[in-house]
Amino acid sequence: MKILLGITGGIAAYKACELARMLVRGGHQVRACITDAGSRFITPLTLATLTGEPCFGANPEYHEWRPNPKVEHVDLAKWADLIAVVPATADIMGKTANGLADDLLSTVLLAARGQVLWAPAMNHAMWKHPSVQKNLATLRGYGHAVVDPAVGFLAEGESGIGRLAELEDIFEAIQIAVSPKIPAFTGKRVLVTAGPTREDLDPVRTLTNRSSGTMGLEIARAFRYAGAEVHLVIGGDLRVPWGLEATRVRSAQDMLEACEKMWSAMDGLVAAAAVADQRPEHYAVEKVKKSEGPENLVLVRTPDVLATLASEKRSGQWVVGFAAESENHVANAQAKLVKKGLDAILVNDISQGKGFGNQGNSLTPVTSKGASAVMGPLPKDRLAQAVVHWLGDYFGG
Ligand code: CTP
Image 1 (cartoon, protein in one colour):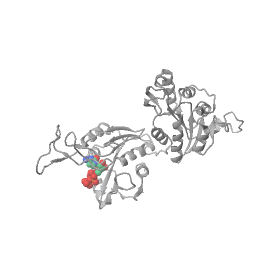
Image 2 (cartoon, rainbow, N blue to C red):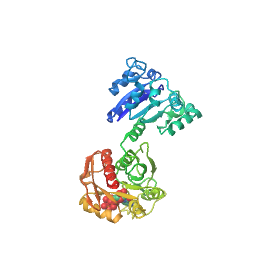
Image 3 (cartoon, helix red, strand yellow):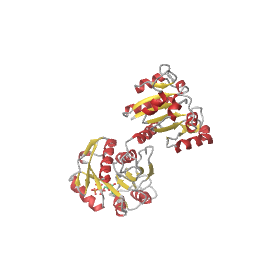
Image 4 (cartoon, protein in one colour):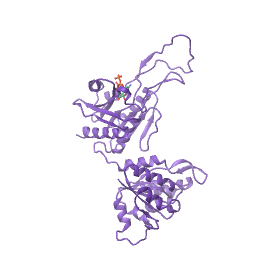
């Protein structure tokens, strides 16, 4: 996609260099447009070098007021699929919110045809000022996306809200904005379970499994990219990416309760969590002391989150499960599909240690009509996108 990176005058401007690199590495065509104030923090040469494109705006070689028959602000606005202003000062947001344009970046912003995304960074008192908040509300009202600043240490030595959001969050917000949408999922509400569950024996010991949660998390991201509203119910410790609502859970029972609360408002479920099938019969409030001789641990079954939600599904809702199989993949998955009342099941081949951790993975979609072609081996992010495309075709007819 074509991304115009607008850079304004704040100390966080130096971080825009790394974002430019990330976007180029992510396969985007990136052009930078820097304001005069921005160019006091970083140079147009840095941006031109990182993007492989001329840097527009306050550039001695490519300056904003050079005679140009192309009408540069309109040309750039038409070129960009998305304009991301990173960092955005109170000044540039105030200008755009109020229809003011006195330099190249502000004129491009008023002439924008594609999407606009703001990543503000400023002192916490400035951020909280009613005029800044009013301008932000105006920009949101225009349909612009905003990646709110983070709380932390600010350049002037104070602490509070105002730091530029993490670059990976800004990158994620850009990806969400520019990714092609899948009609079957646009505006739909999708519930995704992910990660391992933990069944505690006592305050320090727990029963869990080797799932990292990466696959479920990537499925959630891929749905978000496709245009769905996603709620992730996640066990384990993986960081939840920007743009996903999430509920953090511990045990299978917690996961069921969290899912039950929102299931009726959802259009679909993908259960990618590695839910513990058993839990200790008793939880010891105090740490259990070791004893001599053999010790017994009595386990009881946990609720099946997927089967429970499938049994409660109303018309129009769809349910997709995962199956981790080390043999007879398709036959076992089909039996699971019928037993749990699913619309589709994605079979994960875990023979020879495959399927866990961060390496490439393969999945075979199985429905009542039989098995489809295997997807993969692919890295989990790309595999998740392939899965969501496949589901989009399947449910979209
Ligand atoms: N699942 C669940 N709640 C459980 C157990 C499983 O929601 N208590 C979901 C998983 O998220 C996954 C699917 O059910 O979507 C896996 O089904 P399961 O029967 O547990 O398959 P396996 O883990 O392959 O187990 P088995 O060893 O019984 O084949």
